[in-house]
Image (tube, rainbow, N blue to C red):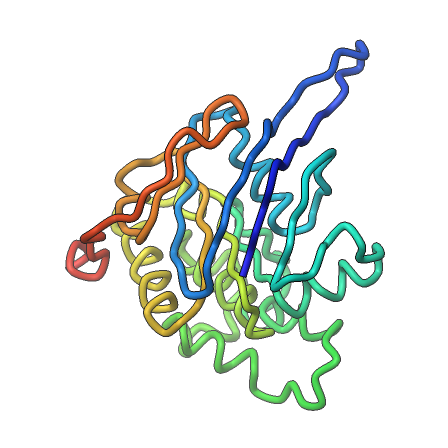
Length: 234
């Protein structure tokens, strides 16, 4: 699905000093993988996630998504591509506080070109176990439930790729395991997932781990027996 070769990303400080956030990153992600990108704060993992999600463009290198060079896509087309083919889950949920869970989930559908969007939001909430909370606002939900709403919102357009940036960072351990159990179920049903985390224990639930330090991939290996979040949460 994804082929990155020699990806670099350089930012300029206000002083004019160049800072290289990504340094010659090459990464292949096959359809159906569950990849954890692990690194400490400032290692470049979130920059890599932003490039993967086309929220930022690389300074150098090539990025192919299903064989298409994303550098050749215009800004408007990139937005349509993201909405249709990539789902995003963030650490801080980003839910609208005065709208219901269902209305939050349905937001991406406003920009969809689907012929019918009826009941897609309800089905996405059912998939994350929140069919009984569709009319609740975020303040009426726990942190784990809010993250489930965010996952449902990311899934509502049935994207090819799900990107999750520290999705358990604001959650207690039990809630974190429940979220990882959802991701594992989604992956087992065929969803491709890339999860960024600094937590080695969370990464151990994925099927592959890539380690990033100082903007470079320093390790990349499959996990023979990923931990079962469902069993741990029992």
